[in-house]
Length: 222
Image 1 (tube, rainbow, N blue to C red):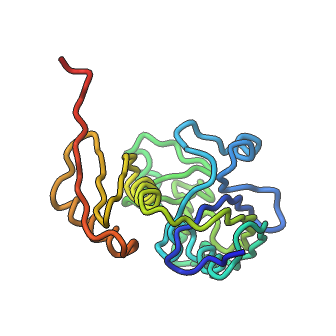
Image 2 (image 1 turned 45 degrees about the horizontal axis):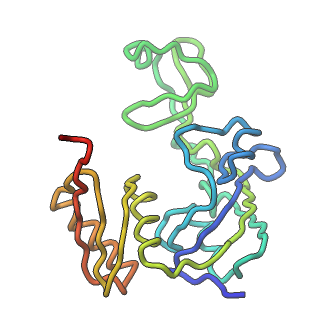
């Protein structure tokens, strides 16, 4: 079976759990998401196409997938350093109640809050102050991923579509002919953004030499 290399686009399915606990925090499987209270109607479930090495998955997970064969069920253990980092005591701070009162929030332990545009978790709330942990909720934890690389993707149109969806949350029809990609979009893409998208796509898909954005006509208008 072929092996996945850095820079390859691969179709993968996975489920992430905290090691030693029956706690699922991430999955591409709808049934698993529903069974573990993770399901969101806004999410698209099923295998996803990612470019290894481009940060579209957890960095430590991507590193472990490089060199792995397709079609095999893999179990990948990640230490905190390879997953969500070690717990940093400097990121645990005392915050006055008043900060939350201004936001009409009644602070309670376990609550997710935003302070200075940074998300944190309230650990304790007493004496007019809250102890807030701004570390990632899974920092300091060993993580286990059950992963399967279904296939290596070779179709450039598929690669572009997956890149647009994962990086920009943009769904588009894509057609590639003789190194030129035509991307159909609902509305015009600003030139600055179009230039950035083209640069990124040409970098990760060298066979694509140029990109044309085509605005689809609204056939519902008379």
